[in-house]
Picture (cartoon, rainbow, N blue to C red):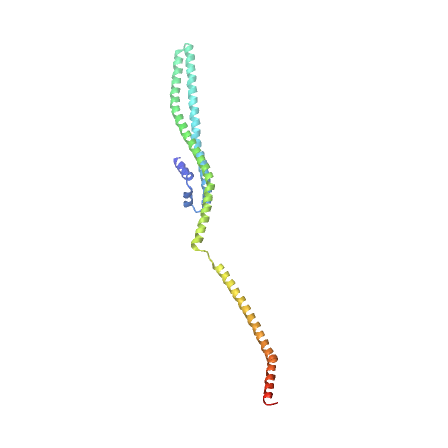
Length: 225
């Protein structure tokens, strides 16, 4: 019986760090620990029935012996009143025998009561410990969730974030800007080329002719025409 109580005390008094260190998933294990504790409690309670029953039985036997002794005491008194001393002696002898048995039974009854009281006290302790476990389970689960989140954040921090997607996006943005700039430059070159050609033709066929006429006029003047 002591081994059961020791196991129950270990389960009920386990602190948060013990649970987190011993089990991979404290959230599930606290529920399992409570279930195990309740199962153990039910088992201990069932095993306690004979002890509690023995207390009742020994008490009834003691009461019966005392009642029998009282009865024979009355018989002895009645026999003595009737003037029958021999019967009185026989009744008193029976009474004394029953008193001796009652004295022995009283010791047995006291031991049975002490065992039953101790067992009832242990059962109350187990009930209290289970109740405390149920109260602490929410705290343990909350701490376990926080621990998981913190560990996950630490792992991300240690490994570093994979920036491949971000870098690829930046490269595509840079490439798109470059292509746009090249297209705009090509458009500008094409436009400038067309404008130069137009200016050349304009100069050739508009501004070029007056210069020749002027030169021809000067030449005629030189030769006297």
